[in-house]
Amino acid sequence: MNKGLALFFAVVGTALLAAISYFMAAGKPWMAILFALISFFFIGAGFITKAKLRKDKE
Image (cartoon, rainbow, N blue to C red; front, side, top):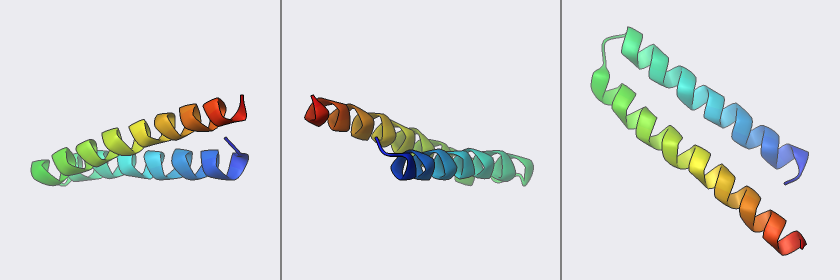
């Protein structure tokens, strides 16, 4: 995975996790749950992308 793509996944993943903590503090549990699901799938997509790029490189 090139550095730009890795940085993208890291920054967006961190922002999604920060959004979860914000919505928990703001007293909006449904938004926190929504962003938890989105962050789970986004971080998973990052791992899938990394695995596919490694497999193509071999």
